[in-house]
Length: 362
Image 1 (cartoon, rainbow, N blue to C red):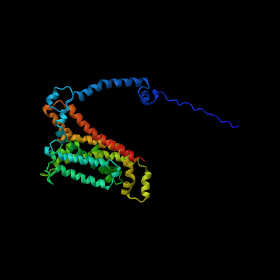
Image 2 (image 1 turned 30 degrees about the vertical axis):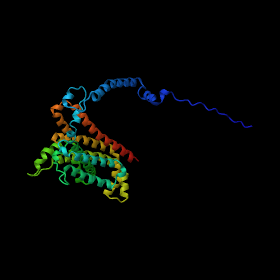
Image 3 (image 1 turned 135 degrees about the vertical axis):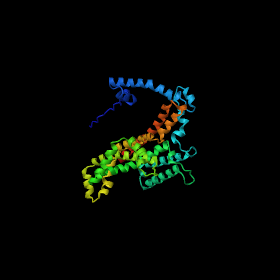
Image 4 (image 1 turned 180 degrees about the vertical axis):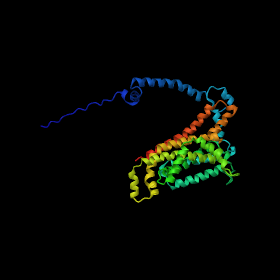
């Protein structure tokens, strides 16, 4: 006679509600020790004292579209300083009737950036699209052909000047920085010496000194009657400064590549340019994505320093707006608006770097 063991199923016992879900997370992370509990309560009290007055100032009692006098009689934020001067802050002295042109240039730039964000489009067509797009943006902004009235570069101001200095500065500085990094590791004494002198000299001075040299000193060395556009001089200074810092970051990536990779490339019969292009640089540049993007973000914010040499970038047009007696005293609201614009650009670059790291992870 076979005996069959009968097993009774136990009822499923759920964990206590205080250890799972939102309540469990709060207990485990915010109230797990007496010190953390006290710190959490202090932070909550600070939020309670700070957030309601801030919301009241920024939204409930604020003025969004009115004159400066109405703002002076209000207890809330005066966002009218932005809404009433929106076009001047963004486009500065660009002719009022032609401000659709910088808008079109910015939209074209956003479209190119959108497609560049996806690695599926990384091919020669995208490169050609950028080359054509840059030319088209220049034609739209400068005019003088195709029935577009000409606009001098001295009238380019506001956000379009900030984006132009950033776009061309970062685009040109990156390959120059890679070349300088390779030059610093070169076995040719002359190339290595020149690269070291350039990198250390540029990194040893602040950006503002280069901007002053490009604006004040450089024209003194030009022959009489020959001038170079002021924006172009500032652009070159930003490129030179950013490239020196990128060079050191890329050099660190090159040193992180194992020696065996160089030897394997040589064993395959590759020459120096092929070794760098096919084996070494793809690995080195992937390693240094985070610090490279940090430098590019800093360079994007440093374009605001051109205000020192009289260029009307986003910061300068804002200061001119605040110089109007009607809007004097509302700098907080104006600078919050500018800070949000800069934050949007920096956050977009940081987000792109994270997605690129994730895609290239092996």
